Length: 324
Image (cartoon, rainbow, N blue to C red):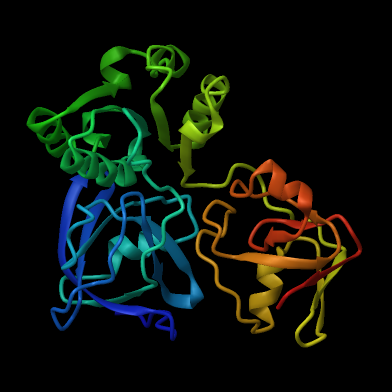
């Protein structure tokens, strides 16, 4: 297998099982090579898988959080992507060693909520599946609407139906080809209890429509996770980045991000999604004004201008001093 980015922060995992779940979607069961318990995780968590050529990709954990013997992720092949999903589909085989950072959670479940509503689209079902499992264990009510283009594009349907039938849940599957139209997101959300915590994970259009429809709800009860960039990265260039710890000054040319320049100059910075949604590359800004392009920081955090997602954001000032 092609050499992977097995840096010091990578945990060795062995691929125990590959399984076809839906069109272009494959699940991976990963275990400790020596059979030891894995670091624990909570519903909504992800792992950053380290790939060749210093690439990193974040994948949601979809199995039950009580399981310490395995991590299960699912990957949708994206021919138009940057190659991570293609590598995951084409290269690893059962028995292969892979490397990942320990679990982190940027999309946590509000376990104390009286009731929870989930809207998922396509591969966005993965973190929601772990959340539903957790709510079943807690005996809490939930309702999931899962939208997909067709039955062959919908993953884990049998398991979701089983979970709904076993306890306190309701599962509705919306297939565009059978209904003859896409899901009416505003209409769907309008029928959800005003006191419910509402979640969305899916493609950009779905999340944008969800956020518009949920705008009148308390912000603390609205949760979402994007799997792709909300907008284009800042690549206008024409400014410099200064590394405060070393004094090194790096020019950022047009067509490149800050992260591109940092990695080209062997600056040690963690990153994962490369699209501003996961928060891994968050870096403290000491001086200068960032041009925020991420979908991770809150509006209040952006206004403070004291941090930046270097994978996608740029600079509004001629110089940006970073705590690196």
